[in-house]
Image 1 (cartoon, rainbow, N blue to C red):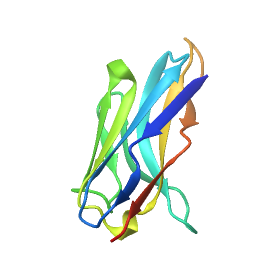
Image 2: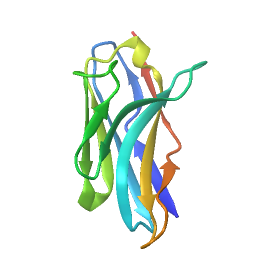
Image 3: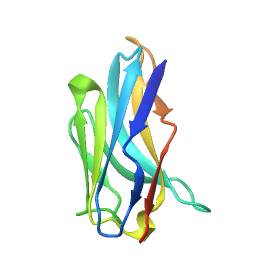
Length: 121
């Protein structure tokens, strides 16, 4: 099994910054993709940013130029630096990891418990 622990959420004023971190642990053989999703009240969960094992990055258009995703493969960690935050960034942010737990095992998705980000004055 793979466990994900997220940290770094909180309350910040518009224009401020936050940094989210997610650490994956457990019986991990390989990790393909690590990423962040968010879900605001009454809305569907959406991709914020993702990075694969080759370093290819995908950002939502709404966060391009403001958010930066990074990954530390040695520590099985993915970070999301969020700058110039806006009230519309308010949501629960979830870490997602696509990983396999042994040689020959299928890749599957694992989700963190979510961390609240609130942008408000």
